[in-house]
Every structure is written in structure tokens, then in C-alpha cells.
Length: 79
Image 1: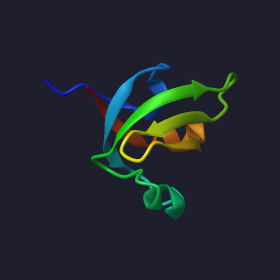
Image 2: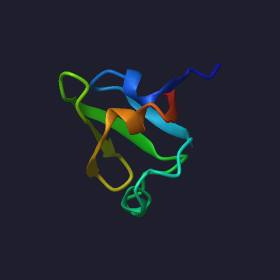
Image 3: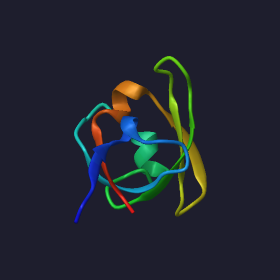
């Protein structure tokens, strides 16, 4: 059974697999770092008051920060 949820609703420590990115506004540098559908990521930090979310791309151990507005457009599957 798949457990799909948007990236902004995850908790620190959750490890997930990116399913879809429903926006063309995601910066190209994210794709270059390995942040694309099929990638495994872990939530490392969530800033308070709707601030950015820091995720670790497990494949290459890269840390990136994503705006909450961008995270809402990314569907992931909990693993």
C-alpha cells in the first residue's frame, strides 16, 4: 500500500521517495543535485513559522533547503 503525502507535511527524520514534482518552478539546481522523482530523501530540519525545509538527498548526501510553497507541490511516498 502506498502512503503518498506532500513533502511539507512530513516530520523531521522521515525518509521518503519522491513520486512527482507538480511544478516547473523548482530550480534546475535541485535536479542537478539529484532531487527528482525516484530519489530517496530524509527530512533534516523544518524552520518554524512556515520557513524552509532542509532535506538530505541520500544518494549523494547533499543538503538542500526548499520553500514550504515548493514542498507542497512535491508528492512523496513514505518508506
